[in-house]
Structures are given as C-alpha cells and as structure tokens.
Image (cartoon, rainbow, N blue to C red; front, side, top):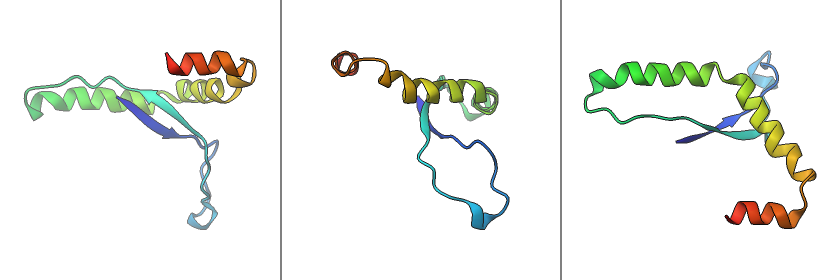
Length: 83
C-alpha cells in the first residue's frame, strides 16, 4: 500500500497560521492480511511505528521526486513512467 504523505518542515504555531502546502510524496507501507482483529493489532502498531519513524525516508523520497526529473531527459522519464 502506498500512503500519500504531506511534508511540513515545521509545525504551525496557531491554527490561523496553517496553510496548504503542495509538498507530497508516496510512502510505501506493507500491511499483511490477518485472520482476526486480535492478531492484526500488533501488526497495525508495528506499521504505525514505521510510519512515525520514517521522516528521513519521506524527505529523501520527496527530494528524489522533486529534483531528479530535472537531471533526466524527458524522453527517458517518459519511458520510465510508461514501463
């Protein structure tokens, strides 16, 4: 599963200061299927812990998706997306 992640470099001091920023990246998360809800809780907690601790990964993915296309010719980018 891929979760869209909104990137913020700092927290807003008040609710009036919140602004919409168009900085997103996709964070891949593996959620294995479980037979019962009781057996799913530890798996869910582990996945949530991964999401909360993955800030370096999120920023690296954002930088990769924002800056790498400027170094790759458009026809190669098109071939990568289409494959």
